[in-house]
Amino acid sequence: MARAQGARAQMALAYETVYGTPPVSGFRLMPFARATLGSEQPLLESELLGYGRDPLAPIKDAVTADGEVVIPIDVEAFGYWLKAAFGQPTTAGTTPKTHTFQSGNWTLPSMSIETAMPEVPRFAMYSGCVLDQLSWQMQRSGLLTATAKLVAQGETIAATTAAGTPTALGLQRFGHFNGTVKRNGAALGNVVSAEITYSNNLDRIETIRGDGRIDGADPTMAALTGRIEVRFSDSTLVTQAIDGSPCELEFNYSLGANASFTFTAHAVYLPIPRIEIAGPQGVQATFDWQAAKATSPARMCTAVLVNTFAAY
Image (cartoon, rainbow, N blue to C red; front, side):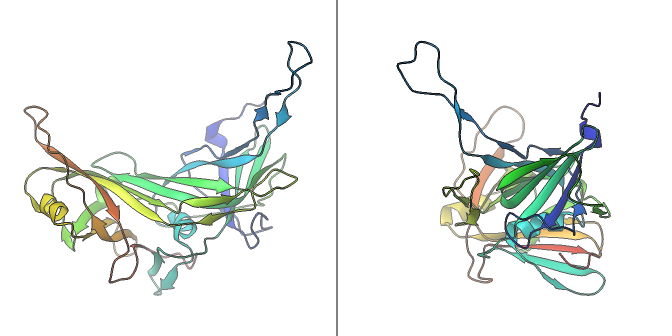
């Protein structure tokens, strides 16, 4: 009897033309490290009395389909997740291509994602996937990955794939070693770690349906938050926090002229942190920052992916 193993699992992704309807072609093979994407339907315990001490049979509740996918931040495939988070990008250039994603779009694309366990076989197609949150961390070492939280409409299980033969992308990963942090265009020193979280704050449209699924997931007010932990060496960030003025934070990864990823939060507000002395080691300060819509440019954030990929 075959046993499912994560080493043999595959994930294919394609954008949908109609929400909740998987396309017949156009699937891409996606690199991923972990996935909790799945569908569940809980049982409701019977509350009826008068039938003795033994309970009556439970009934089925509504269907919930969602989960997380841990993905590498790479040169090509990461653009699919950026499009899911921000909407259609603007692409310019010949070689390389510059794909610019901007916050503030009212319409987000939906995706169909198939996870395959060919040895069982089990091919689970999740339709109507909309990205709720995209987050990652910057640090000195380790593997660079991002976490995409998804809300899906439903799950369909089959013994054969519905994604055909997905087209594989060239995998070229960014690493923590390739990362830099800038404040107002100048390198920000003494940064120990950083966290970035962009949220679409999806509103599930939970209407009454015969199949128990949702009707959609609409974006509401977006949010961009994070944390930077720095070695306390000067009062620049503390002074900004006290003044209540914003700054621009830029998080960048580069592998050369033809491969880079730059994420810019245009108006970042810092809280006044508590400066603790924990012992004889160096003193560190942690800022849980929040971003807002800037005056110029009139948006909250911009993500720019440079590669040789034609279009997303």
